[in-house]
Length: 327
Image 1 (cartoon, helix red, strand yellow):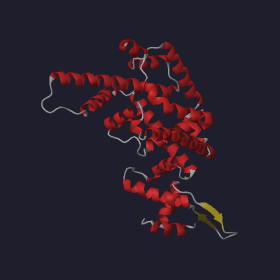
Image 2 (cartoon, rainbow, N blue to C red):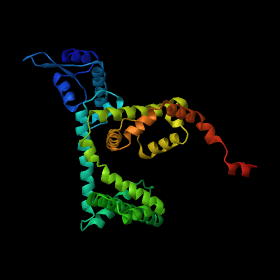
Image 3 (tube, rainbow, N blue to C red):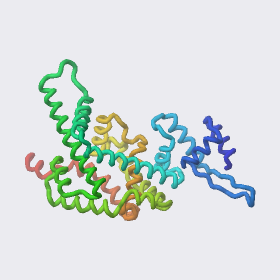
């Protein structure tokens, strides 16, 4: 259909829209029109299909929700939902996002050399503790001491993380000393594991620059990434179909419920940051094709479904210790 017909059909759905708004959606990459030449010196026109109409209706719903600040970010939601989007605009948004992340990391790295670095960290840690819910009435000495201890622990964690980031940004590698200090704060004491993490992380840092991977990406990468996303969604849907609700999935359901309650969020709402970071990872990772081949295997899918069907029995089966104790 031509733009005029598209406008009419959208308006028939009760949505107020202008020709300029259609052009803005195209500029942002939210919808895709097939440009067709009218002949020599006659110009070109854009044809839109049924998916474009559905995409515009969905965009209207996103705008009504008021959950997302920038219309440009809609492209990640539309892509995740399977609507056609302009891959070059999607790529541009990924580069913007990556640049913003790296700028933030560089800012953190700069803080580690600031003369007031420790004071800044302590203020951040104290502010975080101060935001925690407090009981009614005057705080006890025990409560105040607990808050001070928590602030000190937060400050220590911030220092370790910021220095780890600074080392990566400035040197391009993680040193053994940096990793040991970070792991000690996390109660990870295995030197063998340290060596494995150190080697694999530094190989990733040296051989797989996210920035270069995204800049060199093309339409095939985004099509392939969506194929993998669709497969992952299909595997997840097997869980939901079997158990009826995501919250009824053994172990996972309780984890999701607790996470939502603690952070006051709904994990399965459209989350731009999750979609964007997942795509950034898929474009930059070196195992996308291998994972795609693996998950596309019919035997793997059947094995997954069999595992799901037996999961409740496996979790309910008593352990050797339980059998011994209960005699």
